[in-house]
Amino acid sequence: MIDIPTLETDRLRLRAHRLDDFEAYAALWRELSVVRFIGGSPLTREAAWIRFLRQSGLWHHLGFGFFALEDKATGAFVGEAGFHDLHRDLVPSLDGSMEAGWALATAFQGRGLAEEAMRAVLAWGHDHGPRDRLTCIIHPDHAASLRVAAKLGFAEAARSTYHGAPVVILDRARV
Image (cartoon, rainbow, N blue to C red; front, side, top):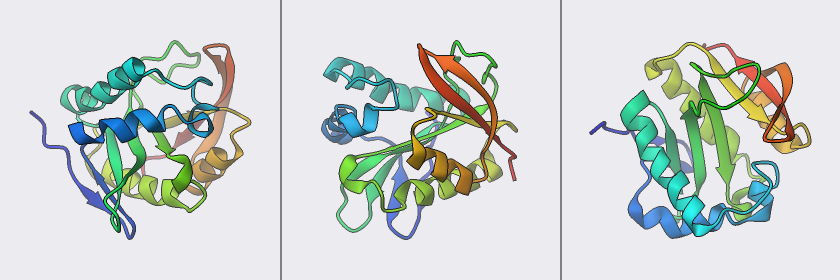
């Protein structure tokens, strides 16, 4: 079993997902403001469970994955952030990259937490990530995530369609 690191920022603890996170995790993926630009529809409890289980599998098989985001002040699960490689049916391909992603519960959006979490994730990726290419995909109407990506040094590389929806493909140097 791989040892998933714990990272700390001023306001967040980035750690492995725990079984007791699942109810908050499932609630996160039912929120319309979360899924509006990530698939477009709330996840069923079953689909959230499969996504939840995927997180530990990423670490086990790829040596990187997503972190659960915990509010240091309250201990509340607030979202997740990290890297994955989902072998998406997407042109141009992201295969072989560490694809960055983040999602925060509605109550925690708009506070700079996504950027704060991703700065810690990117620093970890710089020091420990096994791949050189960093990417992310964002719906072109998701202005908040596009702003976060730009602040993190991601730049538009291409536009495409994924599952019938438009996406912006962004790349970032691993610096």
